[in-house]
Image 1 (cartoon, rainbow, N blue to C red):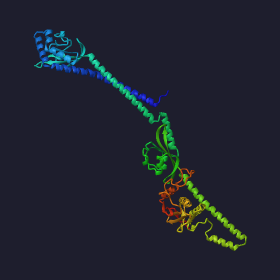
Image 2 (image 1 turned 120 degrees about the vertical axis):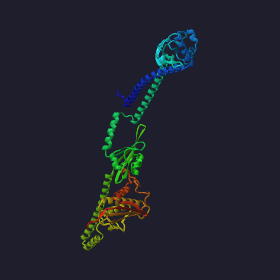
Image 3 (image 1 turned 180 degrees about the horizontal axis):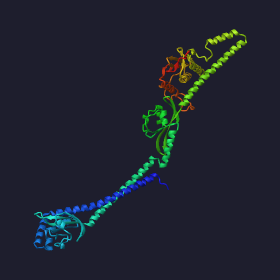
Image 4 (image 1 turned 90 degrees about the vertical axis):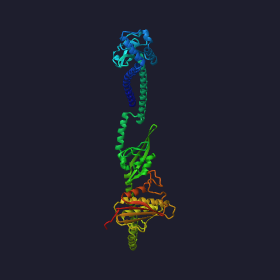
Length: 539
């Protein structure tokens, strides 16, 4: 059975904690046992030195040592009544040690817990203490095993005249060591429990952070992510729940013109207001947005795994090529409509001439041909069209006149129009003109004025084309009609919705150092300037 990674990590952490605690426990236990014994040695030494410094003990030891050296050994009964024995008994009772034994300078007992042992030789070697050294030792005497300290007793002349031996029962020391052991075991148990609980919490957090995925699943996820993010044609930007960009693939950087690194908050990425608004509010339906000269479809959605909010994914699809192709098709269709109109009008006039000739009315036929030639030839009748001599715009405006008539709107050329030469960018020029004229026709057709008209003025300023389109409509209903998505038309067949025309033509003009702006409101006048768009035709 395969054990999950988080379970393996939990078991490994608990094992490491247990081994570490065991090693530490052994070291501390060894030191604690020695420390307990050392504490009792120091305690015994302190008592021994205090008793050895007592004046009665020093005087008694010096007197008994001198008497014994002189051959006068006191009896046990005499020693039992002496101050030295009384002091030894009092200190033993007061401190709770096993014994306080006092010896003279030649190794005989002057004080002892057992009065019958007074006057007898000490049961352990007193040589170190009688040589003036403080001795620590663990020995077994008449009262049993003990840890003891032996301190010398000095006479008035500074010579050693006796010793004090203080012993603590080994059982007492072992009981204290066991108490320390139990305390350490409790601490180790608590540490192990806390470590296990911490490891369990860490494993739980790991599971939450990895969404319960195992390493092989995360490997496959990363592999799939790399394939999706770097091999597709769509741009992808992933934001965490705090709206910080965590993933930005190269295509998204290209389409949205983002240079900021990952880890940048949404507000600092430099997105256009429309794209930023879509990123903040989930929009499953693609919405069109303009980024410089590009038109992109942008959608976003919240991502969840169970009850966990993982953030937002913004998807960007390039629609620039489709939009450009649409503009070219619109331009071609407009010119084709103009040519069809001209061909139809020419056919009608040829029929008139043919009929007159068949009737033998040659003079009338010649007069009719002279009138047609004098009017400028065949074409869709647009008032003032003579001032518009550039062939692309002339044919384009003639085609738009047909659409205007269908909407009950008169399309005319302004009296100040005079445009000669050739367009260097006819698609851009007709795209700008077509958008402005179409908007004006719609506004005039839907306006309240019974006199519905659209007037186009076209001028040349050096190589700059200046187009001014005015209409009899009700004017714009918003302060900035060039904002993306602003439209009065709903068309579900257009991906991303309408409302991109004015925004796109302004960006197109500004990309060539031109501009599109509203120059008047009564009537509504929109002016476009396109530098470098007109050259002489060489005639």
